[in-house]
Image (tube, rainbow, N blue to C red):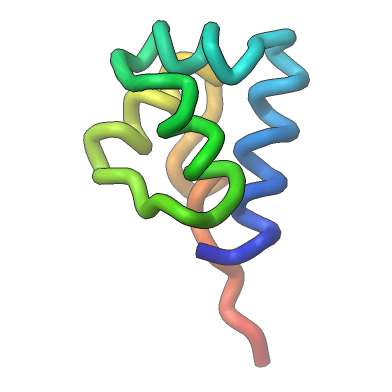
Length: 70
């Protein structure tokens, strides 16, 4: 996972005024899982990505798409 992707997730979460714990509860995972995703140490399933996007009011492209270089 790229650093940019992790920052997009954290920024979207903070903009919604949600803690890691609140987001985790809303999508049915632990706070540690959200922390690991933001730290780039866990690659979430597509189902979890969709759930996160729904809670944060964003799309998969906006939150998880990696821009191609070149």
